[in-house]
Amino acid sequence: MTINEIQDQIIEEFSIFDDWLDKYNYIIELAEDVPVIEEEHKTDVNLISGCQSKVWLNAELVDGKIHFKADSNAIITKGIIALLLRVFNNREPKELIDFDLYFIDKIGLEQNLSPTRANGLLSMVKQIKLYAIAYNSKLNN
Image (cartoon, rainbow, N blue to C red; front, side):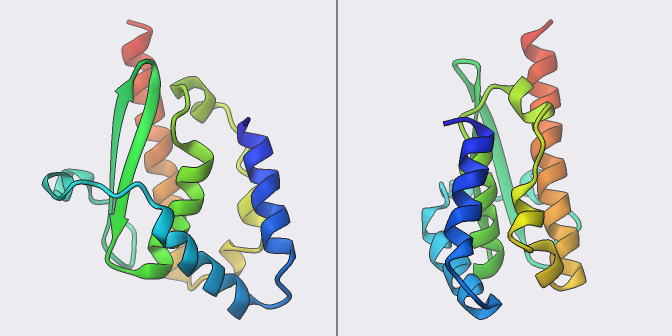
């Protein structure tokens, strides 16, 4: 599936819920789907700054595609990571540099997060893009 197809799928899934309490519960359920980072990668290097809770994100380039693993000490944040990794995991770096991330606005996620969680979401997306830029540069050198 393409990045846009996955985003459209997420938008459709969230459209069945009428209120944000149900959407939060769904996000919490999604936390179970995060490809969990190994304990040895839960280091300060992999800690995303700008998040209210602790969020670790590790990326590895395997066969030209970026594989992400993550974890958080907050269940809502872990669910948000699950959504992001569903869209971005196992992609070529160039795909992650040139994408249009629209599902967050379409499902109203950022508007329904606390300001600190919304900042954390932006920090997660920024870190994913930084990994993509670094790996894309590595592939093209």
